[in-house]
Length: 193
Image (cartoon, rainbow, N blue to C red; front, top):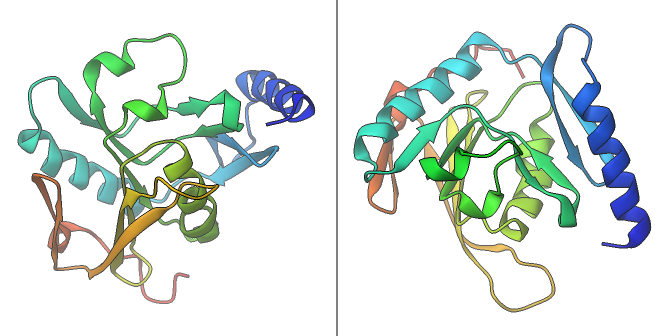
């Protein structure tokens, strides 16, 4: 990241800390590629999917590891401020007055929204391996599919996920020692794209 890019990120971060998006946008914003990303407030089924994944994971996690649906992650050196829909990480990593380090995450789950699916399928898929997040799960209630990405490449200029497995709602997804049962996840209404 150049000095100019760092300065732009610092200004965007300061602005985002004091900015309240107007309705119908979410009160949380993300920063990526030198831009503030405003997101529509999630629909009920979006949040319900995140809640059900969080509830499934929590009893499977080792002591000191939590699943949560809240928390910003930030890597200022890469110009990234993100807010995954579900995070799995050590509880101790949340004991900060700043955003959480993405390097603490063991899993990031994104529930695809109807307003900006490219944010999950393109931007975050590009940035999450660079942030050191070992497992990334995309859950898409629009068409009832999921994709699990893992195994960050060590060689080459830009880290990327080398492994990818697609799933359909109804499948059980193994992620390390954990299982996510997608039969419990809601779909968006037909015609909602």
